[in-house]
Image (cartoon, rainbow, N blue to C red; front, side, top):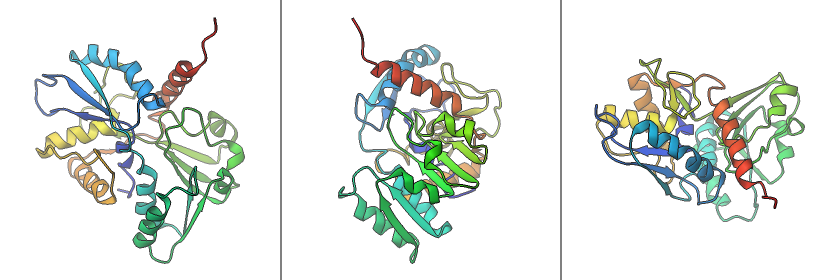
Length: 270
């Protein structure tokens, strides 16, 4: 299994419940949103909460915990640095105090690697492998940002960071939508109101299932995400046969969340 196989499990939300019990759910479910209230992820979570409540027959409690997903992309960089020649970090603010520790962690993980920090998406033209993890409601990556030749983009953001125009105009670019895991046995499993193919779940739910199978209450995705916690999640997944979901399995969910977010933020007219 590749290093970043299940990191997307930590990008959206976490179901903190006792999924292994046959009577599940026997009490209210806490839905942890790793972003501040009012953001795109928070908005969509509150949109789907009523349907999920009806499907599970229990109250869904939305719990905002800002900062839990702020290090997703940087953890990706640490995990993947040993596999590439150069790491380019595209940030919003070059003066952010968070940048120096990230660069130090990447350099420690892969001594001798070139690490560049930029604030311009034009830098992506020289990157054949791109990981995108943001909480913006609108697409960030468009065809003009990509260079020539084949490229792979792992977009773990909801709503998606990659514009639909990329798929339409760039057949040489493979866009992998993250955050989805294929279950090992129940190929017909589905959750009402969640637009995923049968037998697939959001990786956050997969983590809860793995916790039940392992008999542990220790979640690897609550709080800061570390390379060690990701490797631990990967080990559990490999042990129980959980694998990365089909390429594009999350496309419908990403589009739905993007639409919901844009409608929510659209100015109302009299």
